[in-house]
Length: 222
Image (tube, rainbow, N blue to C red; front, side, top):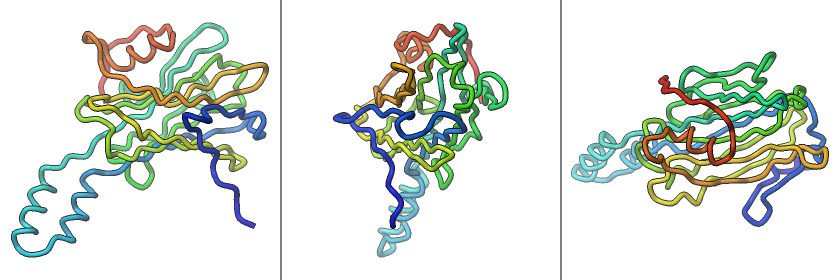
């Protein structure tokens, strides 16, 4: 008997109850993967025919740069506090103490592992809401053609999948999904809302303001 596939959150079916899938404690791992533009160019170069074709493919590969996506999480706590987990500013978080959300590492290419963030749902009573987001580090390019996909997987193997596949031109950040409590149940709601910087504000500030996270932002780097 084959294992059931992931629950895919779409525009027509954007919400799912974690409680109804038995996901009420333990760890939920959030994985972000995307296509490496440079790897795709290298593969095309290997398939090029003729000397001229190989030279053109080689030049194209040399000019192709990978897009660095950064996965993050905005957190609002039930006591009124807020936090952000992201690679920028080395705010990698922790699972055994606040913010009870942690980023594993900073992946620059979207390769085999992608980026992984973990949420400790055993501390879910401390959370008011969590917003998963992603942005392009450095701000250049957009999400078109990256085939970005986010998968949330529980300790018990339940998985929930979102595709970031409808990016408009020049959008370099996306609010992925909002996790809240409704009528006693933890709900994941697909957002997939696209953002661009506004008036000199950092993209994280733009997103947090739109979702009413009262966070004071300062410039950071990684």
